[in-house]
Length: 398
Image (cartoon, rainbow, N blue to C red; front, side, top):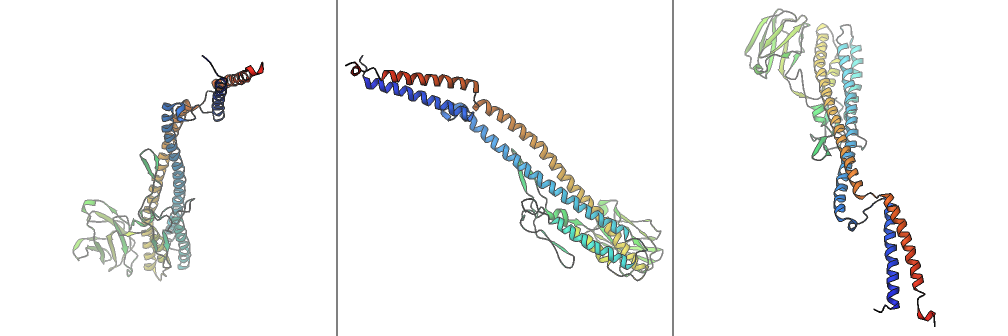
């Protein structure tokens, strides 16, 4: 078989190009540390690598979501702790003003502090996260949720929405609570009924918050407890029907319709007290009502008793506000624990996926360096052989 000179040149140059391509691929592998550079290097491994990269991308996003959720919940917990401190201070002031030696000036000074505490409470309820979004506005995160009017009332401009983030495959976790649920949805009195003393009372009787003894017997209505004399009372419903009556003994239980309360002090004939079904109010209104009561001048013991009555009612409601805030903080603590657990699950998934991915695409440097040296030697030999073959021409001997 006759081999022409051009054919020899083509074969020699082709061998050099092939060796250069192999060497270039090995150099790229060494530079990147990856065994599989293109799908054709290992089609089966490439398919698994794509799937693992998708898993890693999702898990990393879940971890970023967890970081966001943790920061937001920790800030929420801090804000609620601050709100609890404010309510606790208001509670202390409500206890203090029941001191019989307090003058109208003393009570007005306490009322002034209550007004400041009210503004502080509204400011806390309007707190924002690091992204500038309001914590307690529901879905309306760019709208200031609470507005304090000049008359002391507070309106809510957010909604009932609760935001969630995905922290794992098929698992979502709440990162917000509606301000309406935390601060606005609050029942007056003890949650079932609320007591009050008539502003025209002339005695020093003080009605207690009371408790529910038999929920199935309670009938929501407005009941009037009237002292027919200094030692006798009767209870009638809103239609005037007599419910019960009895002789007064200070501190003794007055029970009817599945509830009971008591009266202390010295009521006078004609004094009246009401027991009505609880109504919805907001946390801010509790503070505002107490401040209003303390700003009212008192001319006699009956007036001071009315202030004490308002303070006593506020004490019961403030205690329930504190319970609600503590419960909310407990829910947030549970979510933070859930984040911690899910974060560990995600970290384990990331670790296992990275190990598997490493086994599929990472380069064996010892093998690659040895192969690189062999390919360099082979390329040099091919180049030298080609140079020698170029000289094998009859024209060189003519």
